[in-house]
Length: 260
Image (cartoon, rainbow, N blue to C red):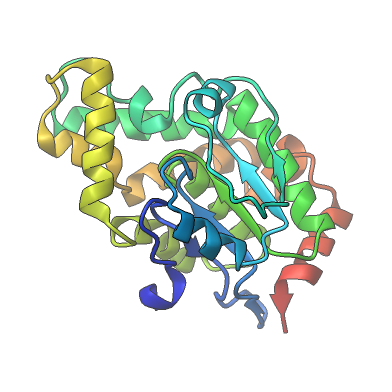
């Protein structure tokens, strides 16, 4: 299953199809239309050709303005997809960097990631871009991609929201989230994250803490979902109240993305 989902690229980490899962009431998500990844800053020409071959018409970039400015995504000469983002700062840092300040050990890293996730459902710039993402999924019947920096935290929440809106069981939702820990070149991705973290904060972070920051854990996503349930009861009500998803948009998403 993992090999079928992951697109093995050299310079884009964690690139995979998050469709294909069974949904409540019967049916299944379409394959080859819902994609997720890390950013494309180090994409090779071969990577870009492989991405072009997917026929993406929409790319949703969950990063903040500063992240896009410092690390612009590479595109091929043939690139023609619409790129959606709301602008603003997503709290200034990717979640794994936000959680990394100071001299920290593994338990502190884990606690900070949980705390960061608990606040993610209300990050203004992230919320604004999630609104664009759901609107695009309801409007365009074509392959799309959602990404942030590492393709695991903000992207993980975005995918979890879409999965629940489309009726994917929470066990499958969590399984897909955890594929980050085995998809692609995990050790290379952790090393890349380690160099970023140490460049920003110095060498006072333990190796196991960096692995925690650059990985995913059920407790992280559970913290975000717990915030949503605490305030809204379920993801659908959160999406309606916070992400401006109307019943008509929700129905259109299901019509376009679920096969019965």
